[in-house]
Image (tube, rainbow, N blue to C red):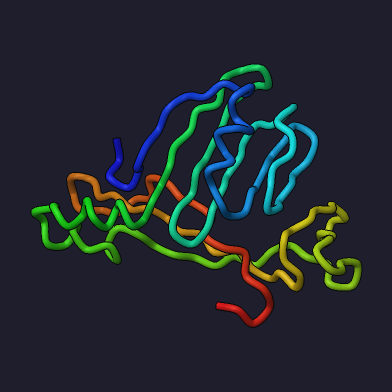
Length: 166
């Protein structure tokens, strides 16, 4: 198991709504027919992937096909920092050498979008739980191969940023 993963496992769809009640954050839900990003999740029918996130952690539930169980993993940066304190290698024990943060602009047609309802430049529609959204903040988790070359072994969503927010 990767050092940044706090926990992982499998959960049945029928137990998912009860399980996620213990998490606060933003819910990014990818269904077979839509994408929902909100502060709560109301349905699991046709859900393929769910990410619950804030600046410190992300819980990710994923399955390949409707009807299967969900596999999940939890990344918690506070727990990761604690684990790194036990690393013997001076370079890889530093949190800043194990992550790489990025900010990506969202695809938004500013003329057609309003409030928390957004329209892409290609015409697709989606909602976000904040107004004036502009970017998304992503954290990449780095590992190093036997030659010391860094590679991204996982990533998580940290935050949706409003215009002017960094």
